[in-house]
Length: 78
View 1: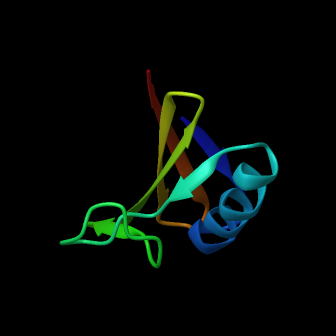
View 2 (view 1 turned 60 degrees about the vertical axis):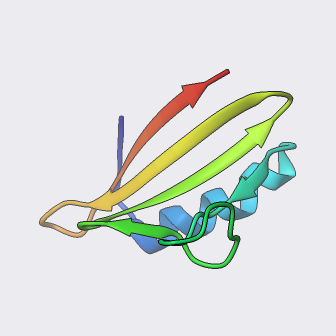
View 3 (view 1 turned 90 degrees about the vertical axis):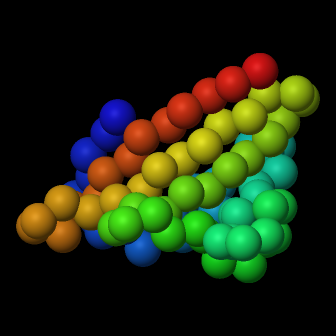
């Protein structure tokens, strides 16, 4: 779990740019269609981005607190 001074949109843009640079294939699931790459799934007030590299998966759950600061939770799996 992490807290960042920039908002949710800035965090999303950062990870969508940096993960591929580091060899991750980014999958942004859309509601109703698994594996779509257009916009992130929104669950309540958070967005979820999935990424895969060498058989490892990571799911980034992006949100924002009451003051507009970004929050990030990273879940990993093999």
